[in-house]
Length: 80
Image (tube, rainbow, N blue to C red; front, side, top):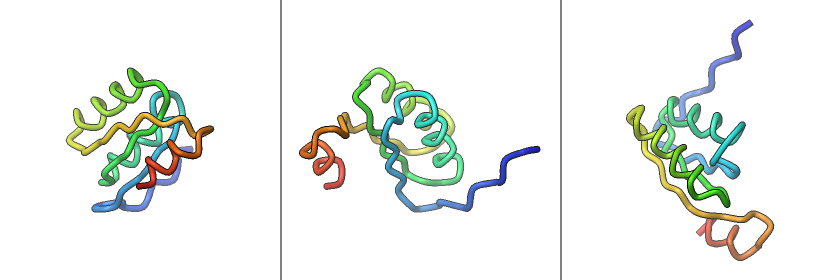
């Protein structure tokens, strides 16, 4: 059985923590396919760059912001 399609995210911003690999990467790519501008946050800068290349390679927009969600200040920077 195929998964249910995501709603349209045209013009919206999706912030994906853990977006450098695994489920986070898959979600970031899915949001981009549905039209979202994606902010990819992770501690793995190489992984974030790869995810962003995947998004821009399919015509989407992505921004990588190095973030360790266990540090309150970094999460605040991400939110700002």
